[in-house]
Length: 133
Image (cartoon, rainbow, N blue to C red; front, side, top):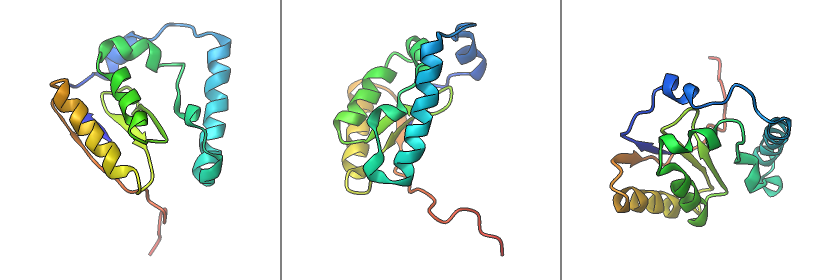
């Protein structure tokens, strides 16, 4: 998880969105979500494009000029996929424990190279879920 200090208000991010999106983009996103769920359930079924978004990311990229190259760098470093977290400015990289430190290092290096203040967090997935006691 790459958390830039630069904040992006949800209202500003919403203003960047078009009032209508192409049908093909909506279909792409629905298909991508299905692929993402399958890939999260069974790693061998993961498809990198399942984290690509056509409904909000392309329209918001100009709000955070570092976003597109950062997402690309995360994948180049070994992340299975990368995407915006909600409206931004946080960016996510999905990777396993073998790639996590390399991807985190590449993210930190990117922030430094581009003078983007922020932090990089290596988080572990919750594999237990809600536990009632």
